[in-house]
Image 1 (cartoon, rainbow, N blue to C red):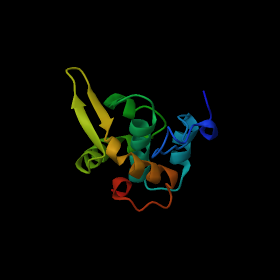
Image 2: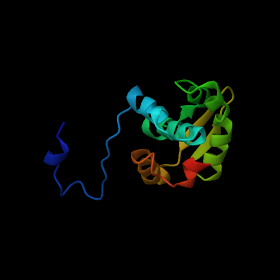
Image 3: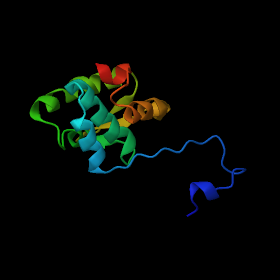
Image 4: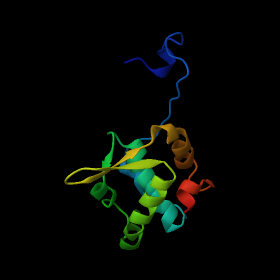
Length: 126
């Protein structure tokens, strides 16, 4: 596969390339930052829904990981807020609830995740 520098600029235009790995280090880094719990939970959900591979996330997967019990209690409130603001949408299946990203908000979410300690975005401030 060609690197970004090797791509034919006549064939690829108007595209953005970002870097954010899916490693647990990023999730752990979010949780180590000096942020309010609501913001940590919101960023964790946005990272899982927007950054990790796949079209959507099962709701129970949002409860897995390094969040403490108090932070996990905030998940329903954060999900509701992110849904109201149009960042994510609920998909109800017979046996599960899924959460899918609104890809039209991807740039906004990347901006939040790129500057987690300085963001003033309502998506994560609750």
